Image (tube, rainbow, N blue to C red; front, side, top):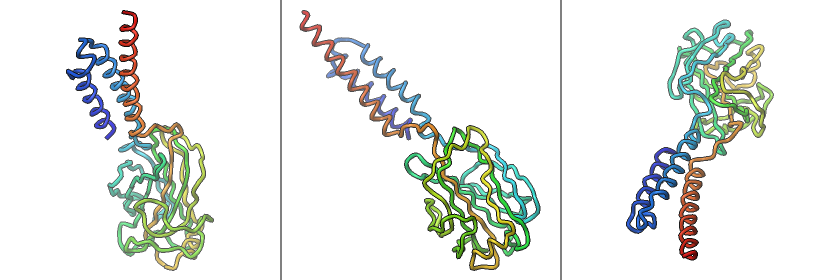
Length: 265
């Protein structure tokens, strides 16, 4: 959308510069046209990162599992939002999604569900953990986390107690319904670009999870992590306004120079 918006601005500038009503056209002066197009093109190039993802789409990353539901294993997966992939030795379906958190923030949502209905995510006597190392495209701040659990139907199981010692809450993640626990409102530089440190969710033993849920069988887990860029990039609308401002200043400068020339004559 950024490219489309700024391309339209460039087209409009071309039309203005070549219009019979344009001072540049009347005077046969192409300098103004060139200046405006170069300015627009420069801004178009600079604006490209404005809609760049915080994470590298299609990149490989690792998730370390312990008894979720099988014994310890590391799985290499691709960061492909909207695509379901088999992980943990084929025992879990992983679906990744990305949601706009507003204010330049972005949620990465990892939804795990056992591949065979009726298979528990883990059992009470086992230690359990899921630890993803996400592939950041830029340096990011960690700004929030949220967790919830699912039953055999994939629907949220509301918590009755704190499993990870965080605040019980309704999901703050756009597109994720239900309730769980999490922490919001902090800013912690977290690394990138490249693979980030692990974002470990663990329960030793898994009985802690079962004690916090009104269900004996848990077959899914959702972890959501909110991030922002350490060096925020202006929004597309900001670039568009800057472009229009540069164009306006250029025209004002042209009129000013013409007026000064007329006075000297």
